[in-house]
Amino acid sequence: MITTKPFGKTPLGKEATLYTIDNGTARASITDFGATLVNFEVKDKDGNFTDIVLGFDDVYTYDTDRGPYFGATVGRVANRIKGGKFTLNGKEYKLPINNNGKHCLHGGFDGFTFRFFDVTLGEDSLSAHIVSPDGEEGFPGNLDFTVKYTLVGADLTIEYFAKSDADTIINFTNHSYFNLNGGTSGKTILNHTLKIDADAYCECDSDAMVTGDIHPVENTPFDFRNEMLLSDVLGDDTGLLAPTAGGLDTNFILWTAKRELSYAASIYNKENGIALDCYTDLPGVQVYTGTFLDTVGKKKTPHGKFAGICLETQGFPNSINYRHFPSPILKAGEEFYSKTVYKAYVK
Ligand code: BGC
Image (tube, rainbow, N blue to C red; front, side, top):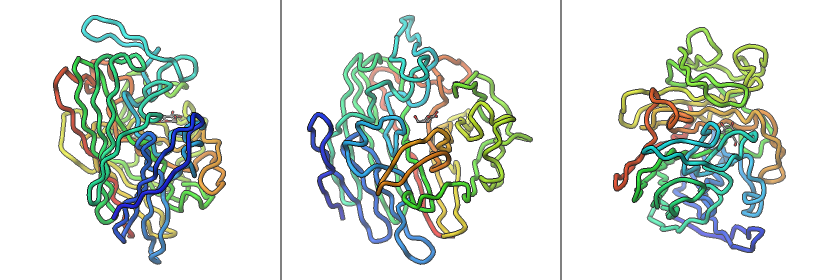
């Protein structure tokens, strides 16, 4: 069943709607502003519904507090592009510089996250569609884009569909911050375990910009091949986690040769039994532990360092500028499709 309700107005007076898919086992609420996942409620070991994502209470705050990208659909190109420039078919493109005065982050100032989408409802699904015109935020090609959320039990599937009339670059992700204690619990994610099916990671500098170097996770704080308690790993800002202030803001490499939907990562909270597994067909997962969060979310909950963890399935950061990274190029007329599933359960 899907219910709809008003979700307030943006500063420019545009009204947003909140759609809730409810199947009795779980509920997912999505707004047409940015096709943003606002709530994801699943049952804990006692059968109590727990909203496991961070977010805001109304569209006004999503539009004015743009830093966190809570629950966001990110495009055209998620993550950083160095110097906000790239060359495609011999032509140089310049993008908005919205990160540390140096780089382009998450598709620019007015990426997909801050656009209103046209919504179509299915029985247990919601499709959100936009057309991004040629040159929007500096990217070439008229890009037709749809993100589809489907809730079956407590499995939330997110599918991306895109087509451009000119060669362009893309990298879509969902930027939900999970907190299995509950997004309004006020607790951090330090009591969660994290497991990532990655043997290697992308090194980054103190701007969280990848350097192009890839390292094995072995003997580093990036080794999550066996589940690790986050409080045992995070917080040390002297060693390899120094560039990311003791947290993770790291692209983990899931594959280099294209594969089908596969297991990527898990988080688990022993206290209330909630676990979440992430599956994707994408090559990387950017794990961001909310290290720089400083805002107030739903129900006036303060969110600081480690208030949530993002499992952003995506292509590698700045991949247009590295030949050894999977290509982000979408050729004119080609149909892009990708799928990520977040499966919540009690263990
Ligand atoms: C980036 C972080 C950034 C955050 C919020 C993440 O995807 O990796 O560096 O702070 O998004 O913009």
